[in-house]
Image (cartoon, rainbow, N blue to C red; front, side):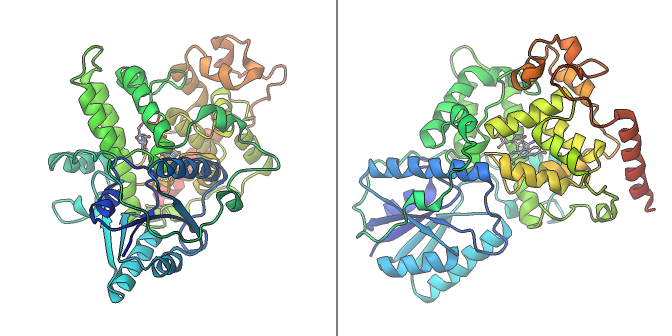
Length: 471
Ligand code: FAD
């Protein structure tokens, strides 16, 4: 009887333990991806992520076809859909790599129980996190709420396993069953098609991920520690959407980056390697948080923030933020980078989030939802964790009184103005001093600032202080 591999957030052939185990079982092989937009609690993908998923599934189908296999596409509530498929195939075993969100785990647990009744073997593997959330605990057996001790605890155990190679010998395919047509899922935007900037910026799929990694090892890694905060410099990996969809695994990254330290010249500085690994650690930490609080995207990690006095958003201000026309160049460059390319540099994510939360006093959940819809790397753990961190409501969060001054942030991290000039054409001919000057240039087509920085800063401090005092 066949073995079924259920692909989820692991759209790759290399270092895919579920796939490898299914192949090693010696059974005929069937492979499926299920689009689940119906199970309660599983967050439907945003627009940019749907675009990515379409292309990633196309690539995965091609890669499997080259091995003589077909990716079956099914849509619906995953638990019922997968069970039905197992019946259709007469499969004797199902393999998947583990997920860590609350609703996803509930689906997987229910299916495991169901298959046990039916005496179908259901096997899960660790593939997408280096340190599974329940394996990392404080001395008291609790989950972690602070990053540094969390990461120390991770590093104190045995190092992550070596990645698995892509399977070389493939068994025969199971008998064919029906599959949806990917185009019928309508994951791509049509009228209007806003995806031109995404197409120009990205190559979804496993080959694109490996290419991106090579590029980073060659060029970015050595700059990483010194320049990762400068958005005009290509010093970060831009692997986040590939990681989000599992086109590459953190195990592959870990060992590739470690191996770079033994490479011939130019050898990246050790601190770049450690810094990069520690950022992978932030991803692990976010998932640790989400595992222990499944509604991280909607509920404050710190309950005292439930009483916070958010302003009812002023529609024009929210729109200016979303469209990148706030009159603050670094904020506008970031929001336009996001809209055009589906990605934003981490430093600028912090600046734009701080601007929405603190200068406009708009609830972090509204910004989180916008990012969710527009980021190609929109991640169920990293996105809410990032927003809550900036808001001050999160675990190990920035203190509430840390209010970024967007002008000073621009001066410090985009000192030459190159990043702003790349995304804000109205300022393309301005000098750095004009771009990041005290009064942002409200000249030509470029808008005047939508808020007064001093006054909005004082308003935010008062609101946060009221919370602190429990007023
Ligand atoms: P690199 O610097 O090359 O880092 C490598 C990998 O480490 C990243 O791909 C990512 O998986 C992980 N990583 C790096 N920084 C962080 C971080 N601060 N927190 C968690 N993981 C990190 N990241 C997402 O993947 N998806 C999101 O939806 C997301 N939303 C964010 C929202 C806000 C408000 C903030 C402040 C941060 C958010 N981040 C998110 C984290 C971070 O900005 C991105 O992971 C990073 O910019 C991706 O670029 P990169 O791949 O070049 O990162």
